[in-house]
Length: 433
Image (cartoon, rainbow, N blue to C red; front, side):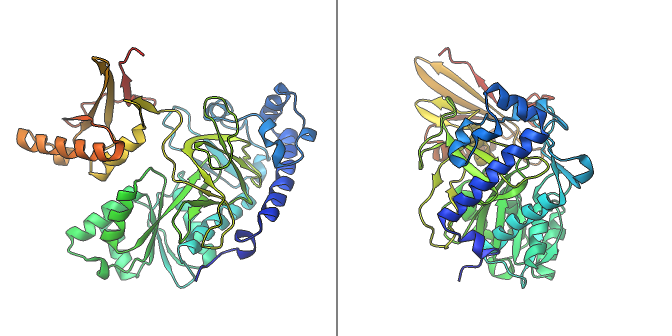
């Protein structure tokens, strides 16, 4: 029996969804034109005024917004409400220098929490459940978003934040937590720790998990499900748009329903910016149509995915996005195969390595080579050559199965890969193409 938090919205007709989007888009364009000089300049540069946008069919006319715009406008340049009406900021981790700071009115927070409540009910959550939120709290959106959603559903909420795994497990067992919210890699670690403690899945009260904020494979999902004895669900979000709950998986688990009453999704060709037809694979672009303080129009996420408008067995009518298949800004083509560093990272994290690695691509006798240098963690450091060789082969096999092409893996000692102040240099491409 499928449960909905806001059934009249989540199962609305496509005509109704379009009507909401048309009306809210027109209002939002006027809002940013009147209140955000940065946007007005971008629109004027394209010869646009709010009168040119009469509904979603005119969305393609609007300029894109990118991470670079957010950096240029930091901190207040995209703010659309007086600071006196804003009640909170959230922020990204800022791997490329300046952080992204997003502002929220109380109304923005209410709508964001509604989106997270929908995600919790989509995994079967009710006010009878105990929801343990093990995403980080603070500037990161994971903890605050799911915490608010859990309250709205009426779950008993355990705001553990991340870390202190023994305490996490104590609370899960003592307070009979039924829903776990955290990153997939942390869920995997909790599962591993429980296994080491000799706990079997039937001794763990959890029944569902809501995992997001990083790339994870279907293999990782199966592994978490088997270790914890739960169903593992995906959730997607961006600080720039609000946080987790932009989209979420339902019982069908065939993609994540986008909350289309709040966000309009488009798929574009990452090179030309052209909007692609339904079902095409390309870069995901979002327009937030209900956000007051920090509304983004046509924000380029850089995530590559597809949108699926087929009816869903769960009864929700909102479009589904596939799990992101990588990023448009860091794709490598090696031996004709599209390779994303995020795929390599997924394999490393799955196998307990840190995310400190370097990918070296070269061309030898007209054939591409792929070398991956991976730092061992201090715990796994060894100078036993046989053991190192075994681990390298194991990682190479994992990469072969993820990428479909072979890679040479070299394990290096902890902290031997140069750290950088800004974005880490993950890829060195030596090919003369």
